[in-house]
Structure formats: C-alpha cells, structure tokens
Length: 224
Image (cartoon, rainbow, N blue to C red; front, side, top):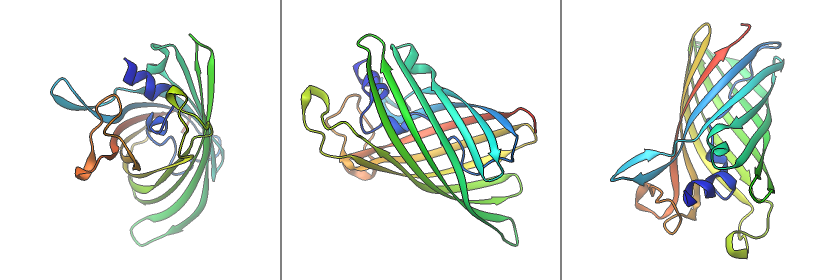
C-alpha cells in the first residue's frame, strides 16, 4: 500500500496516472466521456503488471482546435486521495497528406491532489507536446509529457533535486462512430533513479533509470 500511495500523492510518476486525455482536438461542441486504466510497470507476485490506476474524464470541444477536459482518479479515492486533473489541448498545426493528415498539438494541464487523512494538498503543472498522423480511423502519435514538481522537499524532508521530469510517449488510437480505443507507452522519468523506490518498478533497457508505463483508454462519444 505504501508504494501505491506514493504514486497517488505525488513524486516523479504522478504524470503516469492516465492515458493522454486528448491528442487531436475534437470538433467544436462535441462531448466525450473517457475511461483510463494502467500505470507504471511493477514486479508483483512473481510477474510484471501495470499499476492498476483508473480514472474517468470529460472532454469538450470548445473550438475546433481547442478541447477542454477534466478528470478524476478513481483508484486514489480508495486510498483517501482526491486526485483531479484539468487541461486544454490546442491544435498548433495540421496538414493534409496523400494518405491522411499530420498534426501537432500542445496540452497545458495540472494535477491537484488532496490527502483527506492529513489534508495535504499538492499542485503539479504538466505540459505535453504531441505529433500525430491519421489515416482514416487509425491515429499514431508520439511526443513528450513534461511534468513539473514545485515543492522543494520530498519524503523525510529531503531536498527535491529536480523540478522538471520528461516522459517520452508513443501511442495508437482506433476510432469508430461512437467509440475511441487507445493504447499508450511511456518511458517515465528516464533520467531519474528508480531502483531504490517502492514499489519494485520495471527498469527498462537494463538501466536503473525511470520505468515503463502502459495504459489503455476507452472513450465514448456523446453527441457526435
């Protein structure tokens, strides 16, 4: 339990709590409800599994190139942590190609967490940059999820040595008339040691830095 709470209440893996909410902005006036499952890969009970973090979110097309969203982490509620995220995805560029089109988006957002047992509240900004390529119902994307730790101390009142954590990300989406299915991989904090942390994170590429996150997203379109 101590390891799960550590993920839910802050630290370098906070930005690993859900799939990317919106990669390509949705059309103006459209609404969606999104479910996300997954998290950092950990060694547990003799096998490797994604941390079972779940969340729900609401997405709204404010303009054709601007989508607003807000989410609630469900798993954290069972551990006494209220965990909210709010953000906006802005389409910077989109251009047609022979077989589809490509685009670039940015997503400023923030996480707000409150431990209801000790009433400690934390605030974490995040800034995502994603490039994507769509062919009909298929979309592939990749980019960097940038997470910022504003608090200058960490556990046991130790000094927090970093304020910026970057997470390379790749993903795939399949779209139907009413649904969107999404799979995503992240290399979480590749420049931060993870071999002494709880829980036992998977250490990619034989190096004790960061870990891999795996996520699944399911989105229901409401008024498309």
